[in-house]
Image (cartoon, rainbow over all chains, first blue to last red):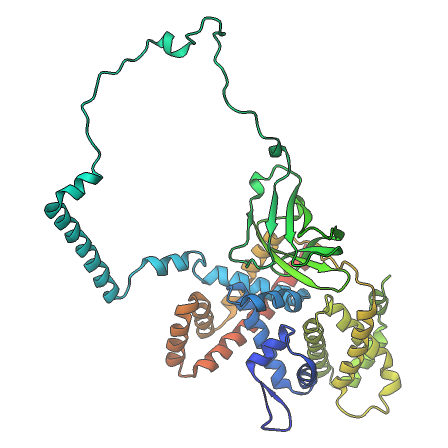
Length: 289
Length: 189
């Protein structure tokens, strides 16, 4: 990371990135901070790496670990948020659809070898099927449905079909559908786990939400009685809603966090849960459509 | 009024004295001031401070108030003085009770639409060559980008790493242009 060719410490691009994500520790961090004030070329490189980091975030190229650090240490302040906004706009303006790209890669066999292999495989399967059907007809008959001669159906007259045979029963139709289950009246909670990534985060659809708030249950890694601060953040790191003093009982592994619908718009969110006693944090991802 | 807000009411004379202490040439002093502010914000954000811009301003305000006392005797790199004061400001910040520091939600769609408009304007201002680099740089997806960068680098006659630097510099210019454009849009009625 640090090379000492000259008197001034030289920092690699990776070290600059680690500084921006708050991952430099101890003397490395202190010497970087000092160098940033003394070395204008390091400042220039850091500014460019700042842009590159915002671009990587917008194009979803950050690793999961870096993604969390990005939200906590990078996406702070108006200037950085503006950078992220511009990166997002640039991506949307020029880049092909992120969702469409993997599908295209999977379905297109651009290389001629793949085309040939696929065609050969289909031909082999076709010939094998014909050979089996010709040489072993008893195997084929096992899979064909048995055809029986259709018998005459005795269809009752409409009045017989639609009314009860028992004269004591009312002429009106009986409603056999079961009563609605009692739990339907309760608010549906979305369970979030801190091991979930942004890619497989649960999705909340606002159009179908019937309540004024969305209830999420945050999985806890330890069973201890504690008080928590839950913060809902956008992918830019903006805290849009928070709830303090949420208490978890010692015997529960989940904590409930109600988010008013007014704070949610379509986009990617994360919930940061901070244990008040020791400041330990966990991040949960959530998507809103 | 919070301590941060109190300190923001800096006297103009203190600020002018700070600039002339940084450099007698007012233009160079202004550039140096912006650089120092950016460095302070970068360091404070890296330390996990939730309000890096406020603390950077608080640091600059404190230095500005002390310039009259130190300007005659201070020797060495002046910008390092800011680093020392910033460490004190950050230390005090860590001792303060944690406030919710909730950022008011902005109307994303409006801002985004305005950013798109500004992007169009700023891209028009680029040279055709720079425009081509930035469009191609952002056009390709991850896998295609590696090959594309090699192709552009070969066509332009520079190394792959230099191309990245060039694209990022153009991107940084775009950022400045878009910010100025957005500020102009806000100022308009």
